[in-house]
Image 1: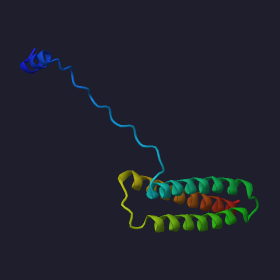
Image 2: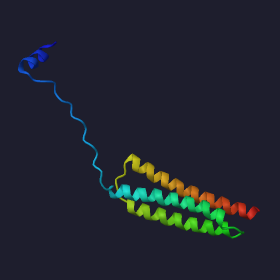
Image 3: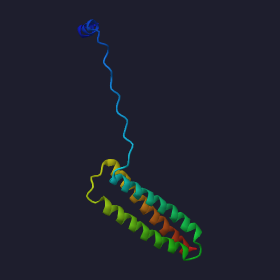
Image 4: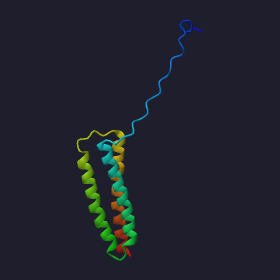
Length: 122
């Protein structure tokens, strides 16, 4: 036992308590996170609608209608999210979410274009 421990034992002081970290506050997301969450959600919904549009709309014009709708919707979603995020300070996680949503929009457009290209070949 060291000098400090013996001194504490004589004074009757017990071991010091270790503070536990405070629980995170569960509340509403900040506006940047809400915008990014909506951006990712809209990109996901657009991807699902692209698949459904390619499968459901048959004939020779179906894939082209899907392509036109996906290009317009992807442009509107991207423009809206970019306008809302302009000037906001984004963390690394925020930038990752923004990149993921943009990539999902690009994949939706590429998938719709591939569906239209395949429709012209068959």
